[in-house]
Structure formats: structure tokens, C-alpha cells
Image 1 (spheres, one colour):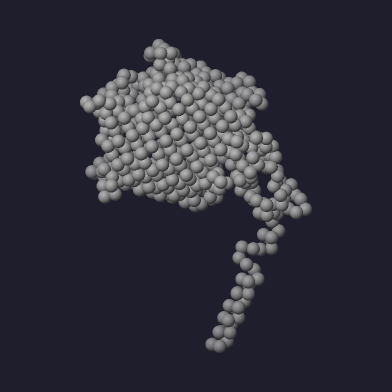
Image 2 (image 1 turned 180 degrees about the horizontal axis):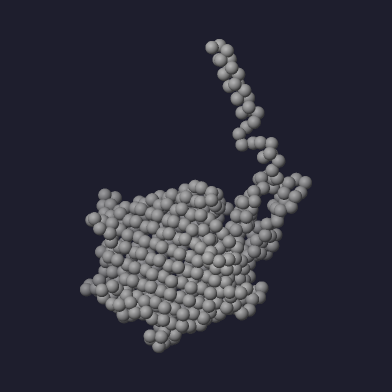
Length: 501
């Protein structure tokens, strides 16, 4: 017995000595890995160098990691004021010298907004600066006049790295003749794929006039005022596949006021909604061109995801009623061929109370892009949406602003909506400073209410022009379209920023 005790004692002391001499996580092979000796930033003209350095996922003294280098380049290209990013590695006597070459784009633009018919025209102007004072801050100013709701003005400011940290601050101030839309958000978003947590707090206040239509004519209207806040926390697990559970707490107070004493208005409500969610996502990216925008190569997200959320509302917490809520979204992404890309999105949400489901919303959409030749493309979209047993008298509108460019914004309405868009996108001139393209399209759609009216499809062919600036804040696209509504026999004009879909 004494012999075994001595043996165990010797083994224990040997094991302890091994731990002291060979600490966990360190090997001779690891000591031989190349380390970063120096980091050089080049190509900046308007941007502060620190703005680029704070996006780097590596630092002097770190072991060189090719995965972090690739993700750093992708993160830098995602900034609105940077174009192409090249990261070069060179061996030096002290280690590896890393050179980050950044294309510093112009970040300011001024865009007009015009839509509608001559006798019902909405217009405005948007001024953008996505690299305010060279610090990576975002500023947006807007002024305009809506044909229905009157004049409006907005100011949006975002600081993505508050005091150089990973925290972000966003402020939105918008006001108009019929209300306002203010929001303040403080958050710590996922900045890298390796980040393990995200959280935030949002405060918001909205007021607007809601309108209900019938056959394109105003039926009733009421004022909708909403004040509330939301706080959330998300964790992230996994490498190849991200699993992100989250918790959220939202408080809102909503008040409705009828336009006159005999008109419709929903009942006032107070909601306190704790909820839990789950996101399963496989991050994948592909460098490609001419899928959505004109200009440089894009880091196209090709990974699919599934999102689920469950929550409840209860009188015991101070809400006006008791029910549970359910939300789900499935978003597969496909590459049918090397020159095509497709997105499919299926989503639904519903309440359940008093033993039955209500306030059900369901939607399905499919979008596909095909590259034709070197610089041309074909884009198509199909979508379907449905409302059932709404808590309010909600409706789905169809017209110029919602996918049917040849018809007035509120031309059709119902609790079902379906849409199909087909757009040829030839590119005529491509220069370092501008890209001139056009579009020939056909829009078809229908909005209806089952048991009340049939789904009568209407279509509108049209043509448009696209002007992109590859050297300005990640290629803005100025869009101008004119479409002819076959059923109405009238033309609709729209001018704005970005592709229509």
C-alpha cells in the first residue's frame, strides 16, 4: 500500500511540474507563428486615419490570422465612404508588416425626390454626408412636401463608434404638418463575426394621421400617437453557423383620436411586452458585381437564416389586455448559377388570446438577379402579403410607392396584396466617375379583400434611367422612372435614390 501511495504522490508532483513548465495554450509551435510588427494605412484623403484603425480586427503584436484579415477588409468595404480595400502582407525582420490600402470615396450627395402625377405631386430634396467631418459619422437632412400630408423635414445623425468604443448612437428628428417621428438609440451592435454579445436601448415617439381608403377614395382618417421604449440583449454562439438567442422588453403607449366625433378610431392601448428570440444564421459572402447596385464589387450576403420570437402581454404587468405573440421568418439564399442570385423570404406574425389567433400577418417574397454579359442584368420580384382578423382596420395599399409604378400611391387597397416586377437593366457607359444605365420594366399587381371583391390584376410598363457615382459614398444610384398604367390610361413619374428593388 505504501508503494502505491508513493507512486501516486510522484505522479501528482510530476503532473504539477508539467503544468508549471508547459502552461496551457502555449506550445513551441505557437511561439513560431508570425506576428504583426507594423500596420500602415494608405489612400486616405478625407478620412481621419483613426476611423480606419478602429475597424481593424488585429493589432501590432498579434499573431497573424488570415480570417481576421479577410473580415477586416469586408468590414471596411461595408463603410459608405470607402470603396475598394486591399490588405497587403510583407515579411520584415521584426515580423509581418501589414499595409491597408483604402479607396477614400466622396461622402456627400444631394438628391431630389419627385413622385406622382402633375396634379398630385410629392417632391423634396435629401442631403447626405456619410463621413461627416472625416470621422465616419452619418448625417442626413431632408426637406419636402407630400401631396397628402403636406410639408416635412428630417434630421438623422449616427455615431457608429461613440468616443472610439464599440457603442453606437443614433438620433432621428422628423416633423411635418401632420405629426412627428423622433427616436434615440444607444446600442452595442455586433461589429465582427466573433463578437459574443449585442445590446441596446431605444426611445421613440411617433405621431401621424392614418387614412383608410376604398377604391382609391379616402374613407376615414384618425390620429395615431405612439410613445415607447425598447431594451434588448443578444448573445452569439458558434463559428460556421451562428446561434443567437435574445431577450427583449418593450413598453409602448398608443393613443388614437378620431378626426370628428362620428368617425372611426381604434381603442387606446398600453403594451408591456417581454419576449425571447432565436436567430440561426450561416454567414457567407461572395464578391460580385451588378446584382443590386451599379459600380464596384459587392460583398453579397449569401447565407440563409431563420428567426423566431415569442412574447406575451398580460394585464398583471399593466397592459390593456392579455395575449401571446408569435413571429417567424425564414430567409433562404441561393446561387442557382455562377451568374445569378436569388432571395426567398417567408414571414408570419400573430397574436393568440381567448383561445384563438388574430392579428395575423403573412408574407412571402422571391427576388432574383441575373447577370447578362459583362455589365447588364435582369431583375425580377414576386411578392404576396395577407392580413387576417386585424386588431385595427388595417389595409394593404398598392400603387407607385409600393411596387406598381404606373398607378397612384393609394390606387388599390385590401387585405391581400400580390405583386410582380420584371426589370431589364442595361448599362451603357461605365467610367471611373459615373455609370449611366437604364431600365425597361413591367409591374403587375393586385390588392383585394376576400368575400368583398375579386383580385383584378393591373399592369404598367415603363422605362427609366439610372445614374451611379462609383466615387461617391459607395455608389449612390439616382433613379428616374416613368410608367403607364394600362387600366387608368395615365402616366406616373418617380425620381429617387437607389434601385427600385
